[in-house]
Image (cartoon, rainbow, N blue to C red):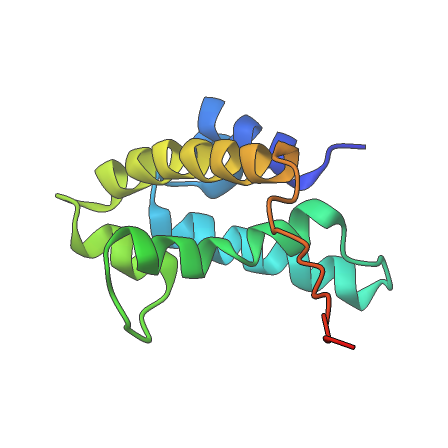
Length: 121
């Protein structure tokens, strides 16, 4: 079975086969339909799907925006057209997955402080 990230990479190789037209809007619609269909037939959300739900926030942070625009609209706004926006998506997606992967590999760096109460007797 192909997981979400494999599917996205397959779309990158042959966008017209999956999307009809190489368009970031078509990609978003396709992915929304994919997730909707999985929910409708009762397939639980995978860890990749949960991780990809953070892509929206990641894109907003990347462009330093606090907008209610969706990730495809943000990328399209900063691109020449739908096709170049789709190409940009794949670059951002690779960067996002690398960032997420590296954050998973880093050990927990929070310092555990031990507070000792010292009283004079």
